[in-house]
Length: 380
Ligand code: DCT
Ligand code: MG
Image (cartoon, rainbow, N blue to C red; front, side, top):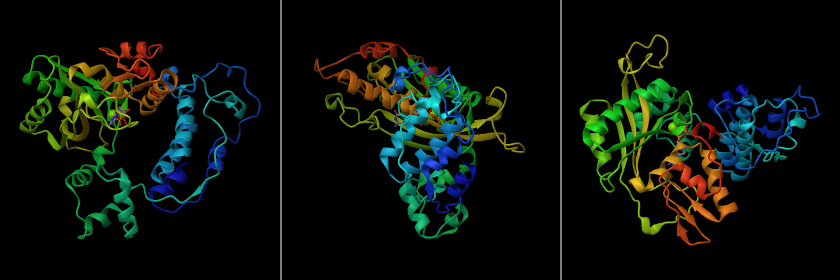
């Protein structure tokens, strides 16, 4: 795998026979099933309990590398297949010991022998650089950050400039202590603006993860309508505090009359902002998660704030708590098994032709006829 990811990073074209890659990670496994591996596992992540404890990391890492490659090449079928396979393995309270262990598991079928060329994913690791731009740069013969930064014909947009400027910090994982310190900072800011503010830490940290790539928050007010203008005021406050390094604010385009949304996995319409904030060492219990020898005393961190109206809070919280695979399967389950449409805004019953209200996540699980799954069990 490290040979493979290194090749990808260096942008070397790599022809890969995918089945070999997977099987090379399983060479010493005996054939027959071990007696512990018999319990039935649902094909839906929302009927599995997936904690951060991953007993099959060696396999899920391999699958996730493949997912990345297929995703980059926009080949959906195998991408989804490997994603589901990785997700099933993450839910197992035991480690797969032999190939026979996987016989009764869902989503682990025979996969196509795809031989493909890998293109540079190095550039897409920069905040603000998508696959299209990365490909364009690569085609021009550019192979490193310094070549891009030195190329005068390249105009970086504001987001990409910040992406390069804070590359080291942003590509470094955010610790739980850093996430909690940021919660204090945001909490102080919103409560100075309005006393009826509601703030929730969401995303991976709500699922109990120790590290994340960013910190996600939902922020709103108990009084409906008052959430409008809340994010601009928070942004203003963070600017005055001198800790706002980058901000991309997107106003709400939420329109209740346009629900239910047919577009599967469409981005939600709530007001949101994608930020880079400056976090001081003194603000973090136990100190910043920075490299040894880094004496700046601060680091940059990616933070997302989403601001739904209060009557949409439970849907937004459920949607932003992830994991992405858990959300995908929750929606698929709603559609396939219940004839309902679920997204970050609402739950719609197609049989009864009505919206189902919810003030908590438990309400939504109950509407779907699902056992409640705690956030820390949603690491699918
Ligand atoms: N999400 C969403 N709509 C978006 C973006 C994200 O509903 N436009 C959901 C999917 C998962 C959750 O919000 C948080 O997204 P990420 O921060 O990408 O994932 P994470 O689980 O928090 O992972 P990480 O720890 O790497 O940040
Ligand atoms: Mg996150």
